[in-house]
Image 1 (tube, rainbow, N blue to C red):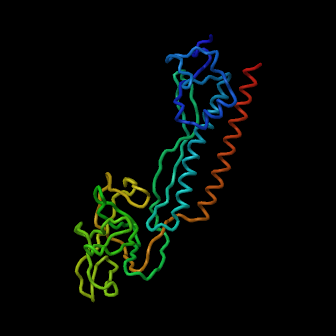
Image 2: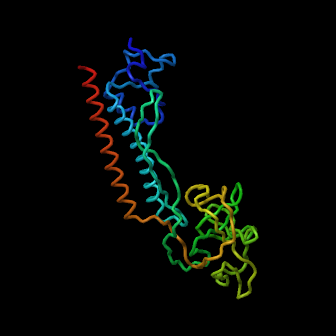
Image 3: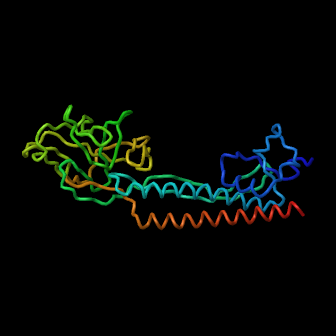
Length: 288
């Protein structure tokens, strides 16, 4: 049998790029005549007749992997267009150059960063006293199950058991001192000032906590609606405006997200076709 290192075989985890290996196994079978290290674990070794073809397949595999993640993010953005406070998910990509044990570069694409877009979403006027929105780079704070969480969503309800103002997940809205906001009067008499001050019949009795961060990129996303401070420092916000009777929806735009979905699908299909053509060429080369 031909030693694996003489036939330019590569050790790659099969689970890393499943699209690549499915295509490979359907069209090429170079594994039966190769002597593999690692107790002959054939699922982890893939060999090539021509290096440039393998690099092309590897590049296509990384592209499929990255595009698949982008498509999932775009689909999520579309699904949450009307979710209050939802932040659009974005990706950045970078050319991938990896060195194998044979000191050969394998090009491709990799996801450099998956992050939330913190630009302001569109405001929808509801007239509901407990619908709040923020203009400016700031967040409301909530008492989460595992600590304080921050969100752009200010849609809250009154808990009849303790009169706390809570959101749809039951998390209490916090004031500027980190305590749950409570209100036991008629909602028609509740007024929220542009600075977050809470008043009943013009008698102020508290202030909603509104915070900003030294770097929003350090925030840890819970589900693109809630964020934890992580390594970022939470500070009292300075330049903001709180609006009562208005809610902020997602900052994703349906037209741009649909275009992104279609473009991503075409790129995915193009990468698949290119990989299939290279696989078929390698198969023919192996038979000859």
